[in-house]
Length: 291
Image (cartoon, rainbow, N blue to C red; front, side, top):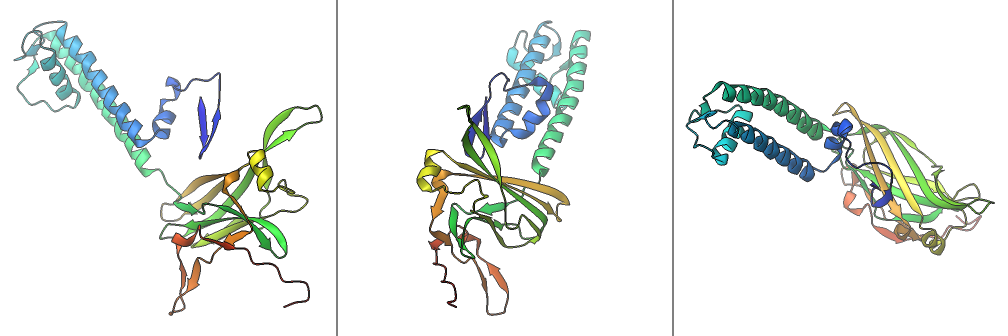
């Protein structure tokens, strides 16, 4: 079974894709298109089942053509939705029992679907934009890995926390090869207020898991970066989460992010998020003693 981390895919075996004991999680996790397709399929299936139940007794529905599946199906559809146009109605005791059961089932089904749609619609989103490339540039005369993000909300995000991890291939002394996620220490991993942009920086020194990695080695080991962001959206009064992954091909050495924040004529700080991925050549660090 595939597990996606952004564009990166992992696979699990020994587990089932669909677990009917956890339908709620699956209904919330799938895309909107699959959700409405599943809703339509379940609704049609329910009405087919009840239509067949009505056909068990030929005179169960008043004003319906004997043995007509279409009449039974549309009567079931109207009963499930508790509409009742008045042309067809239960005739026999059997018809009343089946229609009563369908009305109760329909009310329950409608309540569940309404709740699921509301939860999916109201699920908070961070709305963070990410730079397309990870850059490795000089900062304070040391190489740093940098990732720039921006707040695409019109309001503020507060108490923002970011974590950056690298999925590396390791070989033990016994020759066992496995992958492990290493935390990359950030110069600053928390912000009290996130209004415009934020460049996350990880120093690549002897303590860094990425020490001595170049573009060729990154590609050879198929390195992956995972950035997770957690913040508080005061407008929604809720915590929001987001994640972004980068492949080895997304690293840019000797480049840095171009300026995306400026001061306008009225001395206001302006962030142009359309420039968040814009790169420029890295500026060489001045030599010691040279201003």
